[in-house]
Each structure stands twice: as structure tokens, then as C-alpha cells.
Image (cartoon, rainbow, N blue to C red):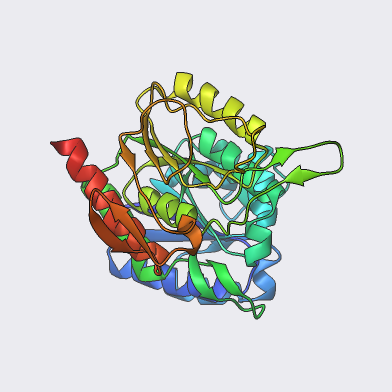
Length: 334
């Protein structure tokens, strides 16, 4: 690969995976340098990264190892690609708000290289509105994401929040530098997921049952296929409609995946899919979607869905997302 990769490691139990990531990237031919936060050093000693990378490890903004350069500026200019892995809620919040109070955050503000963020945290932290808001802001600023996978977490929960495997991250980096394009490269995908609620008054809302599994899986697969993904999840329906109309103007060629459940009461406002390519899941909308997927129950809780007369299993959201995107991409290419 012969590229300079700067790995920024923030503090979480997934730091041990970052050591393996340095090993995999080095084996692939990359020259890797590592910056660690103070919290990351509570989990893994910097010496582990030094041994794996064969380079100095950086963690103190004021520890200038080479007096001829300013370390965080030199690293920012040196990198061909920066990976923030694992990215905790704390470092994501700092990046989204332009805070520069340690070696990692000052370097990130100084770089013009592409930056990829690989979140890793508790599932409820990942779903917190503040974290979602920060991720959306970073996405709008042009940062790319390596979505966390689902499974058993160190805290004991089962859900989304595991740092993606080092082998997968390394493969994505290799594809990036090889110039290999993915089917959704340069595409924008807007995904609604979970439940969109309607406020009744200052204290009450009407919200349908939904867990967002299908919408999140479709968003994750779109990112893996190279798309710029915008998620609208568990939002006020009026706000969601306003956001969507703004996105239509900003991204006129976007694809909308409307996987969120909405209330069916009379007062429910209706999302418009006019002027955008849209895939819906039986919701009432204004306009005609290019694809409407039907199921006996709401898609998040159904075991199968009907796609143009063909039945697809939905028990495994990830597999369903892969199948559906394959179908959409083939339709786009025809």
C-alpha cells in the first residue's frame, strides 16, 4: 500500500483492537503512526503501538520529539489518511464542536487529509440524541464513518457499538488507495429509521412501536457501499419533514430510504417523496416512490417482506439490507 496512515486512538475497551489494526495495516504495507489520548493509555501501554508500528507514539501536545518541526502540524501534513479508531463519544463530541485540547484534536483540526471515524461505545451511548447530533454534524462536514458492528459489548449489553474488525478496516483502506470504487460512491442516501413521533401537547406525543433495526442496517450497508449517509432516527415528524425538504434542495440526486414507522392517526402529517428517488415500507406518502416494500407487520417486526412479488426474509436485518441494496443498485444501473 505504501501510504502514511495516522491512527488516533481514544479511550475505550476497544483499544486492544487498535493494536491489531496497526499490525494489519503494517502487514498491508502502510507506514503507521499512532496518537493516543490519556484515557487510551489507561487501557494499553504506548509501547504496544510502538512495537507494532516501528514508530514513535504521540500523546503529549507539548512533547516535541523533533525540535525542527511542530509535532501535531507535522503529523497532520504527513498523513495520507487519518483513522480515529476507536472513536469514543467524547472524542466525537470534541471533533463535532471544533475543540482542540489534546494531541489528537489539535492534529485533526490541522489536517487536510481525509479522516475516517470508527465509533465504539455502549449501544445506548451510540443511540443518544447528542451523539447522533454530533455524528450528523461530522457527516455534514465531510468526515467518513466506519460503522460499528452489532454483538456482545464489554459492558454486558448486546447491540450496536463494537469497533469494526481490524481486517475489515484494513480492507476498506486498501480499497480506498487502490482507487477501487464502490456502487454508491459519490451518492447521498437519506435514511429514516425507528419511530417518527407526533406531539400532542407539551407533555405528550404519539409514537408508534419501532426498533429501527431495518433502517440502521440499510444505512450501515449504504456506508459500506461508499455512500454519504444522512440518518433521521426517532425524531419529531414535523422536524423530519422539514429536514427532508432541506436535504432535497441540498442533495437533489439523493436516494431516500423511508424505513421509519409513523403514527396512523388523522392528524399525522405526511412525508412527501416528490422530487426524490424513494423506497418506502408501506407508509402513506405524498407522491409515488420508485419502490414500495410491503409486509404483514411493521417492517422492524416482520419476518418477511414482499418486493415486487418476491418474498425476502427480514429476520436478519443486515442480510436483508444487503439484498435490498443489491436490488436497488441493479435498478439504478439499468
